[in-house]
Image (tube, rainbow, N blue to C red; front, top):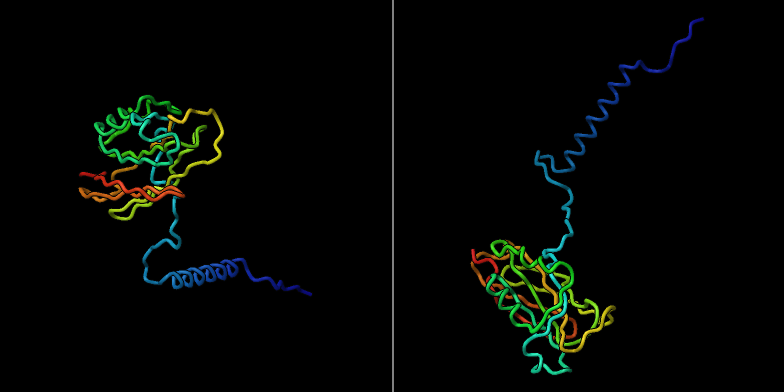
Length: 200
């Protein structure tokens, strides 16, 4: 008595699988739009900030006597040339920097601008001042500054102010147009500095 196999032949299995894969591919293309355009389904954000750390530390401004020991003031700057950087540096009696102080010598003002700020006078220890966000929309840029109220580290006398400096690419800003840089620090009124960071 002969026994007949109930399994389909191997070529039939391959044909069935091919038909199923083809049907799945057509259905996926139709769900995507069906017009042949190749577009990503999801926009992936890099999550990288639009600025990079350059320098931080403590500075003693020339007008420290005018500020008084109980001052609580943020002083922001937008620096777009070597001359402006030299003027910024000349505004201090002394300066103590964290990290590699030679980083300022590597700034290419042809492609970058600097955002800097220092705070007179508290808190008087650690490395408390930082740039946490930069939001650029056309001719307006919001620079968010954070001041750590409970920093750790070496204590400095009141005539030293914590300082932060970051670099930004000129291409973030419209060419040849002034930009309003709004520096924001929680608990303080915003301060606006006008500059042309991308002269073209």
